[in-house]
Length: 352
Image (tube, rainbow, N blue to C red; front, side, top):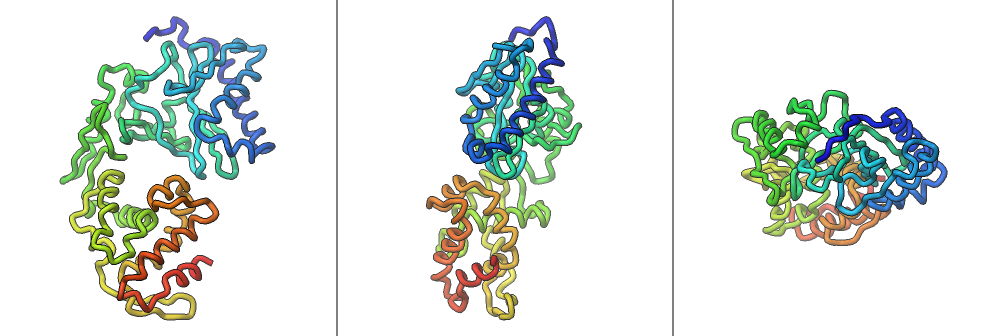
């Protein structure tokens, strides 16, 4: 890679261009929220490029803003030196999976990259930070990728953790090794790392965890996701734990020797709902009722695309809670120990 002789060409002017771009994007978001909310994914890149190009008129960056697009990194380049990587989310948070640690598609000559993040959930908001300041961890999809957190505190980046600056790491022949070494140093007894290379990586976390090593809060978060994503857990099928078991290992990197006990241990119980006492409730339904608020919150925060994939049906923002209740109800109808419970009615009344 060619390194520019001028380490920061027109940096003050570029910082000003970025700040005015964010101001303008947020201004347009207030005026045309409905239109901008539809610009998810790559659709927003030309929109951002046009705003920057207009604001660059009369500055050293006039006629230098290029939309790269495709699979290249970053998405927009200014004066062949500065880069802007554009990310979006339709959820109401500031986190997403970022680019590959290996940066094999990095545009030549680009030396300084900034993250421009569009949160398209109401209220729509745009933020921008230097790229390396918002990369908190490394996660694994089909290759090791950075995890973006636009609210990340100073000193908490993955580069702070491995004590290697971003520009130093990215230029290493094997940038994965320092990251693997870091995660290895954090392993607890009985834990291991997924083997990772450039071609064969599937898990979302580098560390394989044992269920019993998780905190109570971590266990409950996993069980909440499970009750949302896998409604078949409420059925009497002999295979009802199959999909969840695979997901637990490949997505949460957690190994549980006895998955059934996770939901059924403790036997039957009773619960007061409104003014009615329900008795002889199977443990899995007690877990359902007792954690319904966090379950509904998880459904609301999960995209309809992701839920549709887990459920095997097409759902919508307006119907996803209703669809989940219907799936739980249909799966529960054949459980003999729950015949005295109208699951659909109970759930509907509890969320009103």
